Image (cartoon, rainbow, N blue to C red):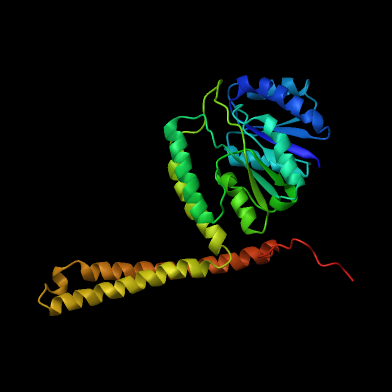
Length: 312
């Protein structure tokens, strides 16, 4: 199987040559492989270094994005340009070990569609590692998949399994979960994680709130993308019922000697719940119309066929 390694690069000038030298040794066992380095708007001269290295390492192809779009966009650009049957993104900071590539390929050869890397022994600051473990636990609950390390960039994908899945925002970390829900066979291997020795980390604590928002989006896409009315309708009905219970509680409180309705905030709170509930129901109706328009206009189906029926 032809292998395409995808390197999203952003200000990793010092790490590029040693990384490509390591990859060169590993890829000698895969003579038909390629490395697609996607320069994601680097400002430290990484693009120039990649162009120079491409003359020495014939297996590398360089793509330069117009500006810094983020890791997900860089990986998506690499996947779009890849010609291999197996796609393997990995970080360009030397923390992912190219020596793990044969293990990924072995698992793919065993019939798995996706092989996810697990950085069980991480060499990062303790707070970052703690937040990563917490985020992974939340993602496992939201997705229902038992992958330990969603944040590990180093994963192997069969192109046929993921090429129909769009990558937007910061959703590359959820790609395995999306594919698994659509029937992909997912395996996981423990990978070596090395400490960063050159350059600066691109992962700050500002990613925490983005992960939380992505979790909400993940829950919606995995469970309710083709039936949004059920998602928003459930929230709306719950809010309306809560509003009704609130006003009933206010009336009962008044009957047993409590303050009048105008002396408590309960009527206003009840009205708020009902209004929010109606808005959620209407939002579900609009989402349902958009979903139907999306499938009809794009001629996509709300299902995937793993093995087509043979023609008679």
